[in-house]
Image (tube, rainbow, N blue to C red; front, side, top):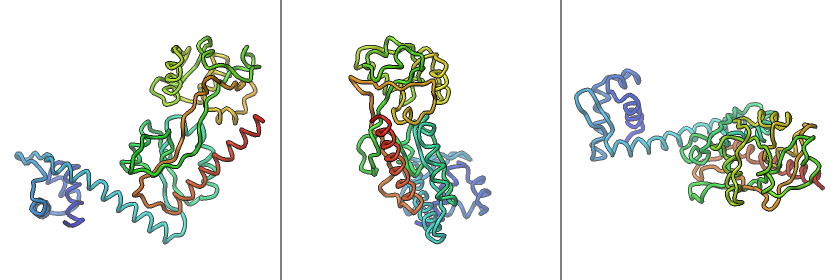
Amino acid sequence: MELRQLEYFMVICEELHFSRAAEKILVSQPNLSQQIKLLENELGMPLFHRTGKKISLTEAGGILQEQCRHIFSHIKQAQDSIAELKMGKGGSLTIGVLPGDADLVFDALLLDFHRTHPDTSVSLIETMDVTGQVLSGGIDIGITIRPDPDQRLVEIPLFEETFSLAVHADSLYAHKKSLYFKDVQKMKMVMFPSYHQCRKLIDRYCLEAGFKIKPSMETTTLSSLIAMVEKDIGAAILPTLLLGNLKHPKIKTVALIGPVPSQKICLIYRKDKFLGFTAKAFIEKVQTYINAAKETLETKNS
């Protein structure tokens, strides 16, 4: 089995047409067909159903296609890592976070990382399926709530993310240091939509407390949620770490107790992924950034 044959095979999978595939990779159709036939003979099973000019993947073809994705992903990782090693700097990195988390923490972190690693190309992707994207190779490093145990993943705990109440400075609750979680059912609330991870967490705590919140307004963006609290449209339940760094004189933070809503946040990557200089530097930066933010918050609350 040759790498060239697998490359040919993947192009045919994309086009599902031998002639178009041959044109795309600039080889003759007879040569392309011969290489696929050799591949099928070696594997001992057909890879495509051939009905006239139409073709489709067989079950064996589907298996090979999935494995080829991993093969070429690993080859690209090796090429990128070696190129990075030759240069001694630079490289590229794709980071996955949950929707809204880019606003919560990572915008500032990435700016800081860029200042110290200006030759590095970093892509930040928001996705509801951070773990799935890491496992499929779509992103290099994910920062998300703690996933179910998976032997394919390396998991680095970052922090226990707690949530507090954000209220307008003129609110009856603004002078309080803490409120019982059940008290939020009496308040006008503004929230993320039901599919957002933060909203799912809050809804779960509400369900366990025996009530359900019907928000006055919903929004998909953190900035508009904060603006609604600032305009006294309603209160919001948001990460304590975020609220501790807000500089909005019209917004006050009130701790929630009995229980304190929380979730474990961790950094994940594939166990079989080679971590180059760029990835290791980013992981170290994340840990340093989170620890500094926690210390600032603890000092502020002491």
